[in-house]
Length: 221
Ligand SMILES: Nc1nc2c(c(=O)[nH]1)N[C@H]1C(S)=C(S)[C@@H](COP(=O)(O)O)O[C@H]1N2
Ligand SMILES: [Mo]
Image (cartoon, rainbow, N blue to C red; front, top):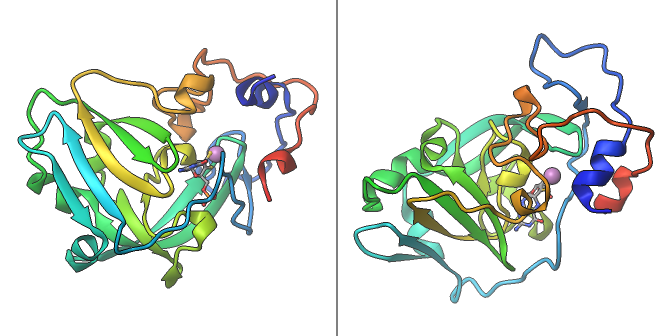
């Protein structure tokens, strides 16, 4: 059974307090910061690391790690919501706000979608307009310290308003596109857009859950 199927069959947690609407439906608040990774955790030589911009752009661009660190840096505080039902409030990330970077990327008008690429082969899709939200960033630090390797060092995307699988760790580039192209989880039964407040968990829109046959632990370590 794939991950989407297992998640559909797990029990819906009973939550009595939604913190004034701050906690999305079907989510449980956690103090911990679980790690969810498919595949291996990459390790890098920062001298070799680079970040690409390609697709429907005036010209392809490459940024080094230093290039990105020299651009203006900002801090955000955001809540994160994982589709496997944990949410964590008040996470401080530091990095580059995408809305500050996008005007300099030469994105052509025909481009409406972006496929975010991370190592090794992990992808997630977004409408380009989502990148302009005020707190979407390429983050290098979490709560005042560099991201740990398992949380996506040296850079990860943060898209707080969508389920956290869109927040690609070990991000390596943006491919701007005319048409939408599903990413890794979107290919595997998860919703194309993923708004946690609308419970857009699965492609087929179903959210009912059966008996808890699936243990969150399988996906945490
Ligand atoms: N490259 C990459 N990015 C990824 C993932 C992944 O497996 N690989 N997992 C996603 C999922 S499902 C979630 S919930 C978050 C988890 O981030 P964390 O491990 O820092 O909590 O990262 C997202 N970004
Ligand atoms: Mo997730």
